[in-house]
Image (tube, rainbow, N blue to C red; front, side):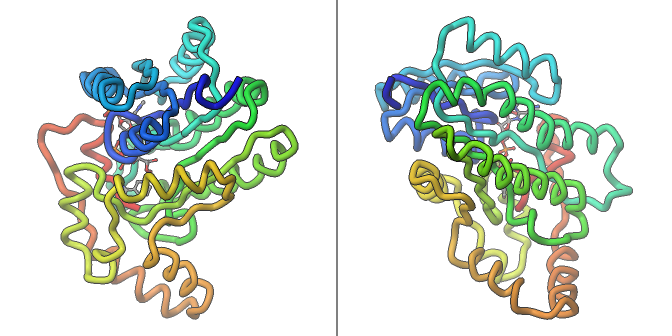
Length: 281
Ligand SMILES: NC(=O)c1ccc[n+]([C@@H]2O[C@H](COP(=O)([O-])OP(=O)(O)OC[C@H]3O[C@@H](n4cnc5c(N)ncnc54)[C@H](OP(=O)(O)O)[C@@H]3O)[C@@H](O)[C@H]2O)c1
């Protein structure tokens, strides 16, 4: 079975980075399984992709913070006999609050989505990927995985998990024809609250922000080439280099300044998954 008769499963595909990744895969002729919370977004996107890119598109609504729904998603895909050769664990939620300002419920949901759902889906789909090689897993981390940032304590920790998990799993699966990549984007203008917040950032941060439509082709290209760690954007790559070179006290001053400028933006109509969690790198 070649890669064009299999499916690429993208979580969090109705919006933001997941949507851009899904469209980029479709552009390359890859069939898609789109997953997100119940709502009209998936249906519209599936129709748009089918009309414009002539690939097979299925979509499943699931709340991935609920363990049973991750299992249900897996069994629905198996029931429909949809062969999967690419798994993109993109669904995730961020925060820009002090730890004590985040509700215990929000923190729990964030860990469930960013860590548990990605890990569980990977465990469920690895045998399927092993049956349809060459296969790929793309886990969406963040540049935050590498820095200790106030107001992003739990988010950064969940993304460090994703980074370490991906790199270790890659070693286990490399002889099975399953390549594991982790992408660590900096800030992206993925949704309204993030874009508004990004506008308030300082000059250096602002020039590092990228649009998801620009990041997606780079990421899918590198994933298909089997790259281990993908850091999109020159400014973000330079930040990683500076992190290695600068002494700790200088980095502390810089991150303190940066985080003081980051304030959450409240947008009244956004649901709980998003309003307490304006996304940023
Ligand atoms: N934005 C950034 O600056 C940035 C930077 C670095 C890394 N990232 C990472 O990139 C990924 C995507 O971020 P984004 O900014 O594109 O987010 P987003 O615009 O908020 O989109 C999130 C997507 O995930 C879905 N989703 C949310 N909660 C879900 C749940 N419980 N179950 C299933 N699907 C759920 C949403 O579905 P609905 O539309 O149906 O709600 C939506 O499709 C995340 O892992 C994030 O950590 C983002």
